[in-house]
Image (cartoon, rainbow, N blue to C red):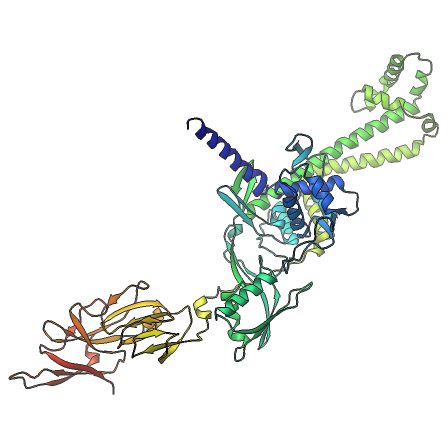
Length: 635
């Protein structure tokens, strides 16, 4: 054990770290999980503008991803269906119906232009070895936009999980632009399936949202689903509606699915049922409405961290400026090298330095002649001459020297220097340059990404209020059974979500769910819905007898709280109930047992003379005489 426990602890920690960082949780810098990053890297490597077989891309990605082709294929299809970085050709499935994609050998893909503009730049990419050490793969892409908010993500790791909802492309970039300019812009999710969303509790990416299907209720006898809530397909939605119909929660006659490029599910209602009374039930009992909890967990600084949407935008703004700065520095160095090379070439040809090498006998002498020829012109050079520069000059063909065009060279140098000044101006004004980059991307691609999910405010439907009270609660006096499967006197209509309060003959009472069939005793005193608002208006008046003295008592009370299925007594111990009423204006008539010298055998009392007290009170004695019978009389 001394050996096994440390080994287990170390290996489990390494496994947990691997699952968190290298499989399940996206990185904040480029918003991608490792498998997505490797797929895009393979597409960049294979990109020639033409479509590639998905099977070829999957095979190519396997040299970077050590988890088999099935996970790569599924991730590629999901990423392609986001319509952000990958162009599709063939059957990639249907996000509305949930139909799967065709086999990888039948479908093709290629990169969309946006991916190169916002993700790809090998010159500034950080590289690391692949799992087998044979190749190099990007640690993260130098992304210029917050991809994690655009794609969304779901993942379960060891001891943690992430659920990030996708956001609208235009809104995210506008929020990024606003951040660069010192403005705060709120962001809310947007889904490819459309639908409605209530973001009151979104909490900047770490709360929850309510999503709903968009329903067409213009026909009083038919409901048409036009858009789906996030995470739902037509298949799962129809299955949920059918299940609710079988459970008698909604009444439909048929469901027809006409979905193609647009969602269209036709729900025909049963006879006597109308649209207005069914909509709430659809939201309450089917996937037409659901609540989504979100948790914005990402990898930042080589460790998992929970952030808000605003923090992701702030990070993306700084990341954008840093990536643009690196790109500008790379371009600046290349321009300086080009200008240096053109300057060398001009001096080499115009000053006829090449003539000096004609009489040289050795390669070393040729090189030294070139070096000596540039000595008078060192002031025109940005750096010292190197052997590599001399080699380049010596490779210039005679034809190019003889056809050297001074004017064209001057124009080219002017363009290079002008571009160099622009690059340096952008470096000095990096924020303005970043804003202009976002504006350019929005102008170029913004029209392709309209908002599809409508932001609204709605109250979550209470299933008890939406339930159809289509069951008849009956009581059989002869057998003492109560329930909607009992043959007897109908008390009232109920739903399966209602609860019932029952006062039995013995004076005990309890609250329970509407039963199919339950024994409540022969001679039940009262039964009603256990609705706290209604019971707050209901006063129970009970006449009972003390079994030891025989004296009559009156008790008036209300039932305000209970524990489900727990039995309570509405009268004290060793007492017997004589009468019960919920009427407010009743009178009490009491008949006493005849006894010697007892002149008054009957007496009447006003119910209103007695106060309403708590359900645990012992009651008020009506008289110090043995009672024969007692009853309530209503006028």
